[in-house]
Length: 549
Image (cartoon, rainbow, N blue to C red; front, top):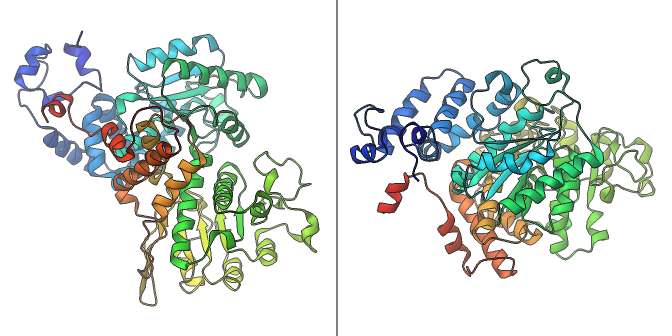
């Protein structure tokens, strides 16, 4: 039975607000519950945008937009789709970090999210059913809040990252917002600020680790697979060891994805491919230094390594191209406490006559002469002029990606890199960067924003109901973005612009869907990835208006 009256107005997936016609107001028992004027969706969007512009701070803007999100999903995504570049830093990074840090103090609405407590594993299924509210869930973004963005452990408040990520899936790729579900696994927190805050809404306990933790995760995975057939399960902002272990455990069995490992890896690989398209060099000829060998850094290395294997290198040969630098310096096989992701790429001390001296980035760059330098260290200014000058002395077109964010944590500024290398550096940053003018050429700076790739990946895999997300599907996603670069244009960016996010998401989705079909990983009858993607893509229109078309 269709919802009527206040129940309908309180359902963000059904509510149209003032767009209900007089006939619909009669049909749904809404007469007298709305102002008399009937507005179109376009009129509503214009009015909301004017109100948005009156807000003085980014936090105020985000809270206002979340009010629209919580009351009318179609209207929210209509506005978002019209102002993607402007809204991205408001509804997601960096403004979302402020709302995550203050989530318990700002809490008003749970936003149809599922809050799962490790202390109540028997309630996982019930909680998920309640949050889904009868909807056909096809995409879940789940976090345990341990490593949120660059701000650390925020426990159950990390649910906002799942909400924000799903917003981008819809705005960029057209994933139906009624088919998504944000989930947080509350296993405790080691953030003393939260544990000492009486208003904190999560479990007031230290994080649970080891076997009990993995048993809880496994119970969650088994439950969602049973409740929601054909699900795409996206893991987000887990601790680096847990993230790697979880991905390795499930990736060959279910349709799953970890954005911090694979998403970051794909977008950086796409940027490297774009840079190589400009320089005319081969990936298999590049020496790669990773500075900051955590979840993101090793995830990128694994993705570039997988690409080298596909290019024809043998595993041992491909691994020789990588050098991991962390707080200890260059990572060696005998370095204490190596993570599972670091171990395959740790070097032998016998390779270097001065191994004991390779304790910082500068000494490693001097010893290795890398062609590619990627930073995920959150070490502000770590790519110094001395290091960059040393690098450019040994490679014609150095690829330098300072990816840490927010701005104050970036390893270098794009402007400095262009000037220090006299325009030779091929640069991408983790944050938006203005074009750089140098000796008459405007250098466009690509942003290694995961949002350029993960929405399209998800849409493409869902469109054909893929069994798994294979390395080959991920590779074609990277190539589809890297191939867009205009290598003939002086100062061309190594990645396409974020402002065309919705266009490039479709490019990625079609490539991924077609690859799944070609490799017989699809579980439906589609034989054309483009048609499959078009059939699944949602647009922000009221349901009855879509039917009329």
